[in-house]
Image 1 (cartoon, rainbow, N blue to C red):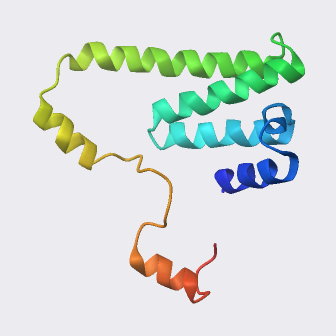
Image 2 (image 1 turned 180 degrees about the horizontal axis):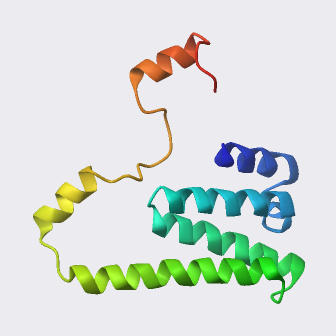
Length: 126
């Protein structure tokens, strides 16, 4: 939903203007929060950073939104650092198993053929 909103903003106001359009920045923040709750911390950090960059341009770096976003990014980075020190070196086999169980699949097509068919027939909301 957030990605669809951002694409709509991009189409309406242009890709260069989206970086300073507050409703688009709010959507980026919301999407980052969603990705964080899904466990996709790297993706969340990237979206938080995009939102922070835009808010700093529009509202100034001392605004409370900017500080909140900086805190979220710092929290994610400290979690990542802690995770790296706890896990140490991981074997290549473990990495392959983990990648197949990744809870953060690339967003693209709906998950199953059934969902795509139901969507095509109009029995499932877009």
